[in-house]
Image 1 (cartoon, helix red, strand yellow):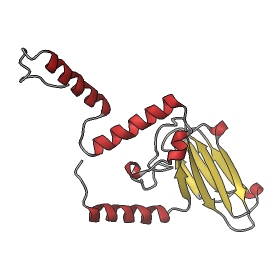
Image 2 (cartoon, one colour):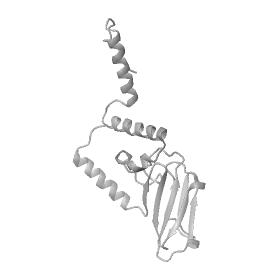
Image 3 (cartoon, helix red, strand yellow):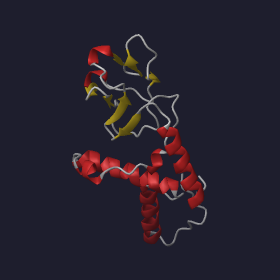
Image 4 (tube, one colour):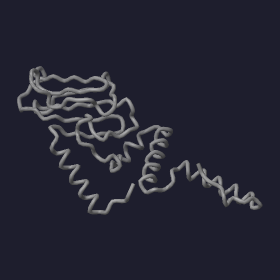
Length: 182
């Protein structure tokens, strides 16, 4: 992928913000879950709402009205672990438990504008809460993603190159000029 100029990056960020601000809801995420906040008229009661959370779809709005948010989810969720609450009779907060808790979502529903997930900066405090094995896996994935963006070798490719260099040093009598990595 070609490197963007600072101007191109700023324009892409501005366009993304404009698209996200135009949505009838706000959303954020951590690796394990997506939080969606849907504003409703002040004074709305829970009994006035229709909230349907299925493994691959969502529908949020007032009963007997066009949903405010409706569509196919980017990836499946765990409906039994997902929740919603009505806050101060003015907004619905939905927490969607991701089935795949090691993937960033570019959007909540498939017909919404996407965000650039490569710009997501996970909170270090959250990363430190993970068990050592999961944390190591996530850090490796993040490193490999950054390397890929820069056009550099992944951690596995770097290990192969290092092993090859050691082998070359141990066997100077061999000709490695035609060696190729696969």
